[in-house]
Image (cartoon, rainbow, N blue to C red; front, side, top):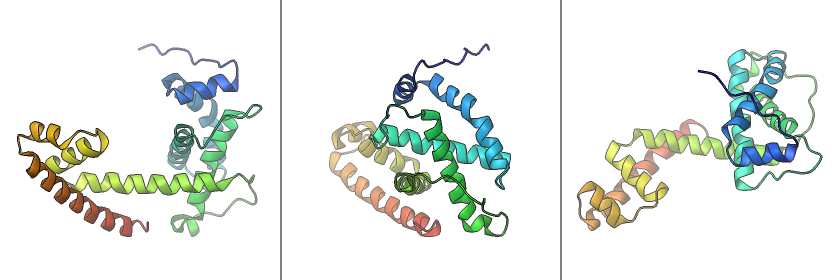
Length: 195
């Protein structure tokens, strides 16, 4: 399978717009442009190849979430790739500070300061989203589908009742029960993960 050549964006605004549109080629461009240098940076800062991949994906996800929510707006004169690199770097530096690495790795002598408030909020939000996903996976299939149809796809109780072949009042009761089960699983997962 032949791959298309990576696009070369005329301006950083064009690149930012492509990321905002979720253009798959823009993601490929980010990986091609940034991952080799980021991997090298992580390897020279007490990390492994897998650490670099994880931190890069988390950092990129945080950046893309900020684009989607409007927290990150393109500013003329800013290199988008530099901003993405900083997001990824922050993820790895946070990982180095975590208990998992206290005995294994030493912190780098210095690093460039970045605005960490948004990055920290994104990391916390991502941990919450992951806890909810883990909790959803613990539900039985019918419960998980019902909650996804109601909360994600925003189907009415009547539409869900038709799909499940149930009465609308039964679906309402079942939705409540499933939501309570999800809440219980979430609390266990959140407590286990220290959220």
